[in-house]
Length: 477
Ligand code: SF4
Image (cartoon, rainbow, N blue to C red; front, top):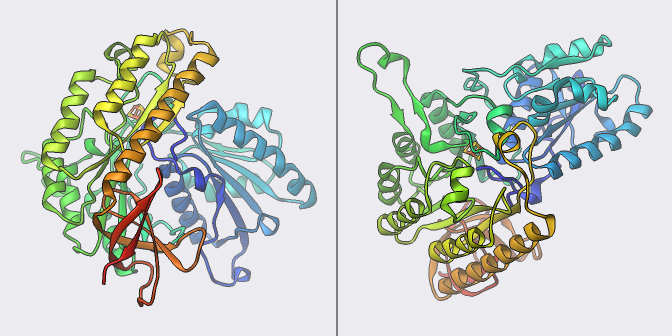
């Protein structure tokens, strides 16, 4: 689930996940690091880059915090609650620091960027503070901190994309991987802290993206998700085309190139800003069976007045026309969204417009939150956070209830249909069942029966039942 008020995926089940990607004997490494990640998919992807940087310098990862010499926490600033979670976690690290002399604690990511030195002052146990564009300097910062200094690098960059760093995969299922294609964001949604914590938008070298995707496919991965705060504004000018004959690579072209790696490799992407997703992208999606028919298209509010205050740069009508266009070009496309209930000055009529845009768009799924003001954002500077908490909560509740109904209706429509499903692994509740996803990103659970299948295989599944969150089916022989 998404736990934020911006356009990035956040999986609730992964919050606080620690990882240990190296199966090798840890003793070969000079030191061991433990890294725990919070926030959006971008942060989890960054933790893989951090792991790769540290690993090259002789540090081995461990998922056991007690054996770590370095503890890192990759943080999220998007909501107050996310920051509170991290603060709480930091206080829990105190006991490890007491027990192990020389243990270093580092804060990475958006909170590091946002709070910088304040973090060192307030959280006495923190030794290292590193912003999202400064991970290359981590090994030197560790050395600095080992010498007793507090080590900080929160410089934002205009061109850092970590293009040449091959991320160490968290490898939670060995089937799906995130591939970062750009960093930062040039939009200035008034509620969002991302432009301040992750800096200006920059697109990663297209060849390095393609090579990473090919490499993943060769290693057995069957699905890549191209990641960025606003993937549709991907724009890369290759070295060879600079000068008089600039031939930029757009997101649609990048998507097509990745899809062409193999029809066996599924391609997803996240997140799309409604103003930037082009017809070219939609037609590319329609042309390729292996580009998944699913778009996360955050609307945030159904009221044009609120959208303007949010600086989303589209109106209600414009957004609705975009949804219609998606349904025309890709009739079976799954669409999900984000909502913020109770943004500054939101009236009940504005809220009713949000409910009605939900009915219109028939979202399969949504990430829903009430507004929480973030320091430093345009909204904090310009508007009063004037909607009482109980009103925010009530409106959010209505949004959640409506989404639950829409999700149920959407899933019921799938009963009786057959889908191609990519198997991701055993279902959570029963190891005699597989769990996978269809192209529309819906989770499908089905019995393994006598079929010789493994995770990473594609299989046709006939849907026989559903809940609001899951489809249930049987394998079609
Ligand atoms: S500013 Fe960028 S990251 Fe934040 S919500 Fe807007 S598009 Fe998304």
